[in-house]
Amino acid sequence: MMPSALARSLPAQVSDTRHLAGDLAVWLIILAELLAFGILFLSYAFARTFDVALFNVSQSTLDLNSGAINTALLISGSWCVVRAVEAVKHDASTAGARWLLAALACGSGFVLIKLMEFSAKAQAGIDLSTNTFYMFYILLTGFHFFHVLAAMVFLIILLVKTRAGRYGKHNHHALETGAAFWHMVDLLWIVLFPLIYVMR
Image (cartoon, rainbow, N blue to C red; front, side, top):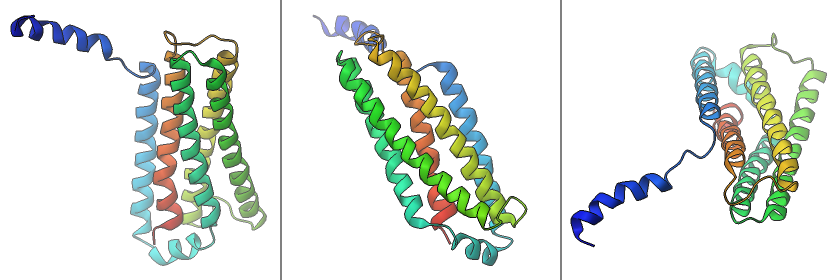
């Protein structure tokens, strides 16, 4: 093949292999959610500058170990989702279903730990009106918590369909969509954990 002919053929070949990993509508939702959380993160940082001492004292009541374990759980869940997608791409639906189940186990662990944390704060009489820090803490972690639940519902649906053999090498678009949403939840926590639990 002449160089000029090769050059003409490359764009078509490249365009055939490029595709959006997941549904465009879900990506728009992800961008909107990232924007909403970004505004909340900036609001938190701005409010902190007005009463650093209060924020530091309130942060010291949070359980860093639980937060770190939850970070490990969500990152592990993301890895499991990636493995599930890769397995299904190779027509290994059974393995893909197992990886999705493992991701759900990680998500369940996160939910359990967060429920224990929320329960402890409620028993201590802490709510949105306690102080500015706890208002942001409850809003941010609570908002994220419901996103984790939504992502788990998404994964449960995908797990059922994967077990039924609905996905394979030429049909894994829905799995990539679910993976994208799960990774967003993971990314948000990676920012939220150091911001709320660690930074002084």
